[in-house]
Length: 530
Ligand code: GLU
Image 1 (cartoon, rainbow, N blue to C red):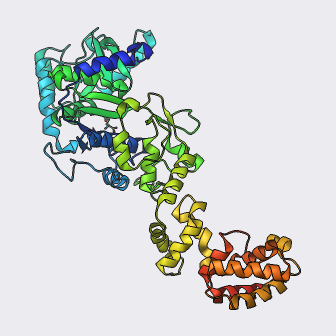
Image 2: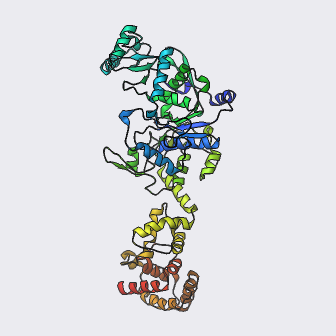
Image 3: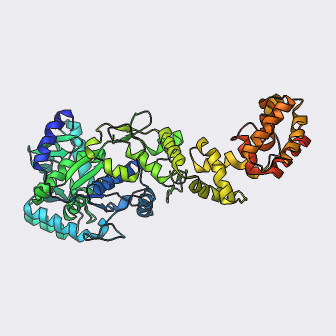
């Protein structure tokens, strides 16, 4: 249905757009998730772009819950959505619990409104009742497939052969409606007309209405379908821009037609369909399974499926900073046009524009997400990181003065991507080595090491105050006097302090451990290693 021929050149289109766009229209955008499960990162990005657009233009950002498909409703999904957005700092001005001038914001609370609007379409002759059973619909599809006589859809050709208020007499229609038999209301799509969708990202898309089907607007359970509820609400909530995922692009012509049917064309929002987020190798849409297969979360928060009990990991629980996660998402599809990669929320709001969102799908790179977290970790103050790390230290059964932990953080922060990876780097500060890395000992613990270390305990007893600088000076003069190299001393001390060949500057480590502990560790190593 859609191909590049449908688009006029983007530049040309944008020129026209500036001429026709109502300049004075207040920006009001919405994020309209269906509570059918946890929010995928693509959904969070859609919410983010809406939020940034609203904030940039001094507009409103609305959260609307589209829960009219009862068969797909999942318990807990709505609160998950709110919690995820809150964690990301994506705040909304109007929404289900917050309220607002266009309340209610949960579609299941707006049934009456949709009934009224379906009645309007029926009245105007833009919709009709259809009584076909699912067996009859299936038969219609099969027949078309057998005869290869067109698209297996309910459209201008097939509707004439089905049981609906267009083919049945008024009396029969009335009788069926009153009989309580299930029925739906379908859109009466006009034949062979042109419908155009203006998309800020993709240009102008033209479709012939004969390719569209008579979509159901009101289901047999009396609830509206997504299409009807979505358009009615966007209109009633004065939405100026519909910014949503590319998967909704095929629905856009129908939505434009609905605006036409209702006579709301002058209030129609601008459309912007965002590119897909693709698998790391770029081959297809990023799915939950890719995350499991490649070991990264595809959901903002951890999610436990209420039906299967299956647990999916989340960015929050994996230790990502929300700002880093948001920064990662912001650049998945949007290109600021500069080399800048790290953006504060304020900068994102300032720089964001829909014109710089690409049409092409964005490959998700899990390593880049980690890189962003690393960058944010480096930019955090040592105090703040220490504060978060303190909980982990306590969980491990230790305590420490905040100032000391802050100094430790300064030594190791650049070695990790996540706060939760820090414990591995610092555990030796709290737990003296019980055993020593055999390979290193074999290679680096030389014959003269014990006697050197023994002498050093004497040197350290006299090093006062026991600071990294004084330790450094003391070691230097010891080396000169005793004619020993730095290598043997440093690795010897490291083995004693850490138990293996890792860790930050050993003089800094010793200062933090304190003289007594340093001497004790040396003595323990001398007793243990032979
Ligand atoms: N309820 C739709 C969804 O779940 C909203 C699509 C739109 O923004 O129009 O994504």
